[in-house]
Length: 377
Image (tube, rainbow, N blue to C red):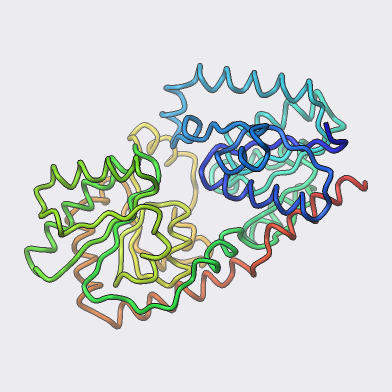
């Protein structure tokens, strides 16, 4: 085993992307790192299987969904903790995934105080639990933030924090194309998880049906995160009764679609930042299990849930949440956007301006440099 061991934990598809890029940057900058842990297929490939792929099982949304699988998560947590205690890594690198990773950080800080703990993608405790921030400050050695406003929140509690930009910028710049937006072409972006798609895509299809009553010239294209998700979406299209050629499902092409559709509707999450980065006029939709929503409503004290709205400090993008995320409301917004080029142009410019605050390319390299410095302390 190499002399410098980094144990990494990511629990979602986006975390796997960020984690693999960061692992690659660390290996290129400093070398001599051995990676172990939990992640996704890309992180597993880079580590020759030493970082195990678990994201398909680990990526769940909402408190209610986690509680339903409590015993599974408890077992994975105990296994992970045991492995880290045996390996005694120099650095524990946590990538987002706060529900699991914050508990893990607390245990490792107590049991392996010599291990440096880094969090890449700061947990959004500023949204749902400010009281956790002092605790995080005592367990972590470095917080790498995605948004500028996060730095003073963590530094105020005494935790060394850096805002190095958003890792999405590198990925999105690579996928930028020279293209003009089509006419009467609506993009449907229902999310990457099957449960999320099952909650949102039928509503999007019903919105499409409503729009077609007023304008038969509209076309729809839907983004699927994987072939598995595409098959689920295809079954919903078949059940909707819409003509087969009216809604095209494209797999793995979401960034391309965001640059070519007239406007769209996007599930809350990272995709809303992607759409903003490309200046795509869109509305946001969000639905979770009602117990999860009611609990979150008590905890979260923010005006908006859309990341681009939070970044801008005002509502740029219309948010349709829970009961408001219905076919009537969404179809009405889409119809107005299609009919008014001025609305679309204004929103596109505002989104581009807000997204410019995500920083410059080279985020993973800058993060790797900060982490490598920990080995010299």
